[in-house]
Length: 114
Ligand code: 5GP
Ligand code: ZN
Image 1 (cartoon, rainbow, N blue to C red):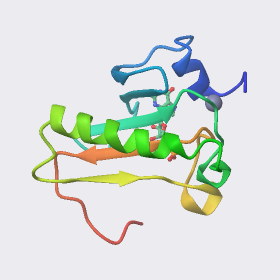
Image 2: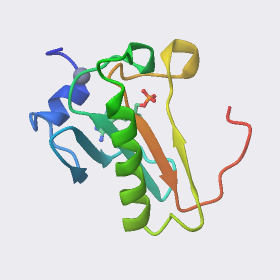
Image 3: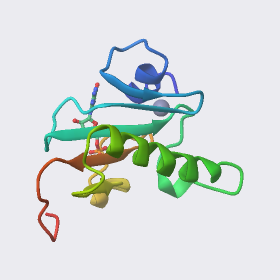
């Protein structure tokens, strides 16, 4: 997926403010933050969306969950809470077709989302 912006960020071809990294996952600050804490968590491997999760790659979701917890603790939003968002497909509002989760916190969220 050579034209994917998040693959380029994962490969460090495009700079980002990295907050967490390991061999499978990268987390970095969203360019256009919607909360005091707005971090994107991505698998380094290109996966288009949650619809492309299958038996071979499902372990990444459990791993991402542990990364979310680490970042929430680091940014002190673990106690007050946060929102974890995955936009999937056109109607879900997905604009970058490399699987990612938004971790939003540091303010009270409203419901329902728009
Ligand atoms: P989506 O709408 O697909 O759920 O979210 C894509 C997110 O990626 C948006 O919140 C947008 O601000 C963010 N984004 C898009 N391009 C870049 C980029 O080049 N760098 C960073 N840090 N965030 C980006
Ligand atoms: Zn990609």
